[in-house]
Length: 87
Image (cartoon, rainbow, N blue to C red; front, side, top):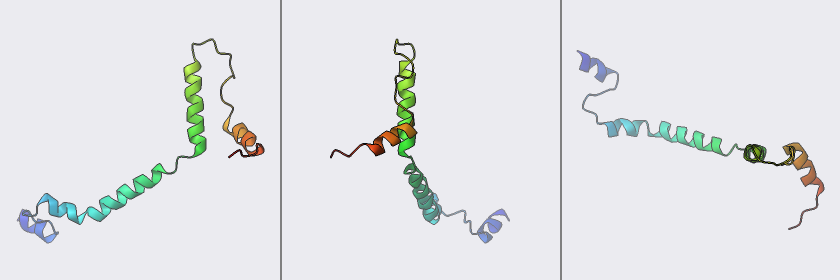
């Protein structure tokens, strides 16, 4: 009874896991592609702020004066846009 109900729903007890995997292959590929696309969404601001936070954390416990680290990203962008390129 149970096996006939499974067969009616498209699940055959004699199908191997490779056959079932092949049926879901497009879904797996789409999921991986979507996940990898999200990796490209890291902005330069996020990277800059991460470096800034790391430098602040490394400065804890040292005799470095406060506010001696990197400026905020907005200030950094403003200074960068006013400077002429030297390439």
